[in-house]
Image 1 (cartoon, rainbow, N blue to C red):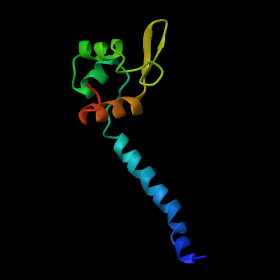
Image 2 (spheres, helix red, strand yellow; image 1 turned 90 degrees about the horizontal axis):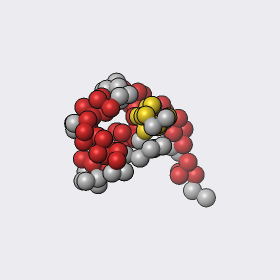
Image 3 (tube, rainbow, N blue to C red; image 1 turned 60 degrees about the vertical axis):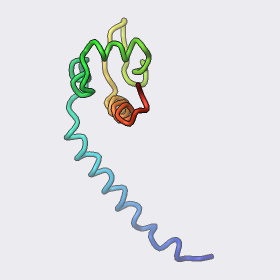
Length: 93
């Protein structure tokens, strides 16, 4: 067995810590995404376009947002950021 393959295993916790620090720094650059107006602004669309994204199924209940009594309670920040990134790559029309 080649022990050289295990030489860098001790670096894994250090790398995980660095990734965590980078994620925390990135969160500072993401505006709050709690209201339709904030999400629309973040996506650089109008609130009407955001409503169209929801009604056409581009933003999915349970993944991008949660509802209660037919009202959106909360948008899920990571899913909204993912949607924006995919849309900007042309993966969402």
